[in-house]
Picture 1 (tube, rainbow, N blue to C red):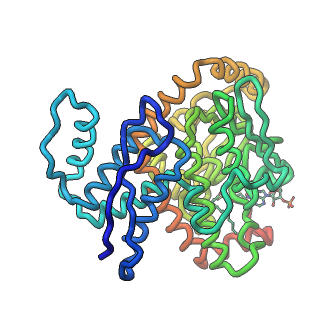
Picture 2 (tube, protein in one colour; picture 1 turned 180 degrees about the vertical axis):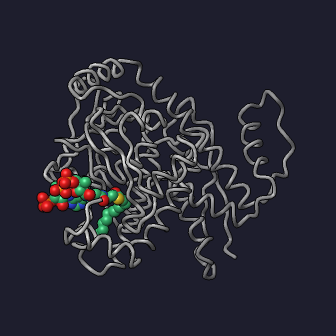
Length: 391
Ligand SMILES: CCCCCCCCCCC/C=C/C(=O)SCCNC(=O)CCNC(=O)[C@H](O)C(C)(C)COP(=O)(O)OP(=O)(O)OC[C@H]1O[C@@H](n2cnc3c(N)ncnc32)[C@H](O)[C@@H]1OP(=O)(O)O
């Protein structure tokens, strides 16, 4: 077992919220070879130091608790007094893990850090960080005006289907929008469609074999969905027309969804031999109840905008003739609200779910990777590409 000594290091910029000194490992180099999970744990501890954004107190408490559980086991300290607020919160977080085994705590710590830090994860795999990348295509157009960053899916001839480059550009756009001057961020589409989902030629046109494409797809998808889970500002979808597949499932991670009455919503995963993504296996039953979620996610039932509103997926439906005017007027008003207050309110809401959402995302990506290699899925994609099927 490696000898690990602990020192204390300050993480993130000093602020009123920063009250933790998270433990950082110094690992003796002369140690024998370790099991992968221990190595992952140490890498994760180092990644914590590299986080550029303060992940918020709830997450820091969770990290602290998991760290202590993984290294010391169940909480063995006396409970601090009521006025020792910081240590009491830390103690409670640790104590709440009960008898969680050290190895599980270690794994949960690694998962939590990797979910917080997709760019650190990517750079550890030898990739460039998102802010070092240039936008790759003109199929995503990003503008910022009136306190609103607008991310437009701009591939109308293909119904705004998402190419591999578009996924990467959206990750980059969200990363930039999270720190720009805008108060809210809005997605919409050019032309008659909002988005027809994943471009079904992503896999058939990928270099390398299907296995390589599926592995790459799962990594990109996980990072893509993470960037929605972690997005810190109000995120609004202006659904100008039909939405298909991942364009629908992602809506469960938005803060508000405004739809034209021309919009429809469907997720033909079973028709495609695939399975749900973007945390919809969790968010959809939560939003609309399991019976309605089943009709959408298993049977591919198409909803009208009003049906989607009745089921809680859409915040409000507007007549198509006045849709743009009404929605943008409203959003410009919202963008004038105090931005920090909106961020903090969103953080309070999202923090209750973040850990769960990351776990669901990871599991959905693993499941999809296997489905992409199945005969059912390959046949369905081939049928679409050879124009035998319209979904
Ligand atoms: C290396 C690998 C990288 C992978 C990257 C990560 C992958 C993450 C994947 C996440 C999982 C996501 C799942 C989904 O989103 S499932 C849903 C997928 N979408 C569909 O199944 C829709 C398919 N399209 C249709 O059924 C119809 O086109 C549609 C009903 C949308 C519109 O019909 P309409 O008759 O009005 O128009 P056309 O069919 O003539 O379409 C016009 C042109 O647009 C092309 N098109 C439309 N949608 C897609 C699409 N999703 N993928 C590719 N191409 C699409 C269509 O082919 C037409 O093109 P042409 O004019 O050239 O024929």
